[in-house]
Amino acid sequence: MKLKNKFFLLIVFVLILINTYHYIIPLFVDSSEKNLKNETVAFTIHSNDLLRAYSKNEEKTDTIYTNKIIEVIGTVKEISFLNSRNTVILQSNSNTFGVICDVNSAEKEKIKTLKENQKIIVKGLCKGFLKDVILLNCSIEIL
Amino acid sequence: MNKFLLLFLILFSFSNFSPKENQFIARLGQVSFFSYTSVENIEAKNNQVVSILDTDKKEIAVSMIMRAFVFKKDLMYEHFNESYIESDIYPKASFEGKIKDFDTDLKGKQTKIIHGSITIHGITKEVDIKTVIDNSDGNYIVSGSFDVEVKDFQIKIPPILSSNIAKTISIKFKFQYKPYEE
Image 1 (cartoon, rainbow over the protein chains, first blue to last red):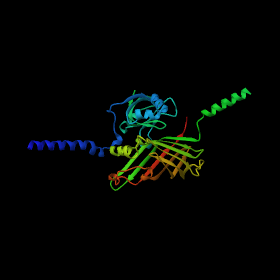
Image 2: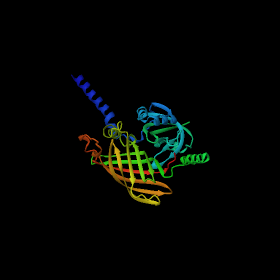
Image 3: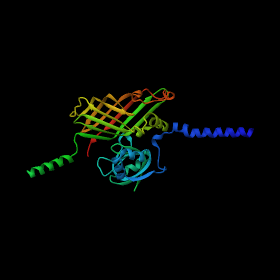
């Protein structure tokens, strides 16, 4: 009887722990600066191919890439620190379109060393397409 | 006759290549919203809002991805996208409007009313927004704030959470424009 009780208590305890992990902790975690460096990548794609896919069929491409962690290979078009964000814009074949990468603040120093037309790999969470493809929480790898 | 046609064609093609002088674009526009209640304050920011300003037609267009709003907490982001905005069905919000009595020659700041329609959660509503337009050296900065009612956009909030989310949400925006090159 006593053993059964202990077992029951243990289960309750484990359940509370699981609950804490899944529901309580997220309430206090600041998700705005999540680092994706160690997350697995769903797709690796060149910026030109990514934009071609989006401009051809946005809806279909959205279902493939949106909310996935992707790696984009491309060249730097512009670096901006507007609104105290660290933004790198990647080039594409067309002047109108690009890839906007909102880079993790931990990599600010790395961005400062970037130059125009430099080839880089950006890993980030794809959010969709407006005039540009938008990637958030990015980390950068210099080639 | 043929020469004229050729000249005309050359002129025409040249005029096509020159950048549109009356169009401006902001790719890194900032839109944020706030919900203040006694239980909790919710704040979200989107730093990748695109906007195009046409100084000829005195028109402004804005488009944003709802999933690009960044919240303090994961759970807020999840509720916002899954339950309230339903970002899978309505991934974007947009605004189109006309700036009333916009004086494009005036340098410096001017406060104007923009009348237009805003689309959130698939529902379009007409609004008047007071904005400050700052014109310096041919670059424009447009900023302002306005309020929206949650119920106007048929956003359903479960009764248990209704005390956490304000009935009126205040929205702030700031766009810094550059000449638009195609």
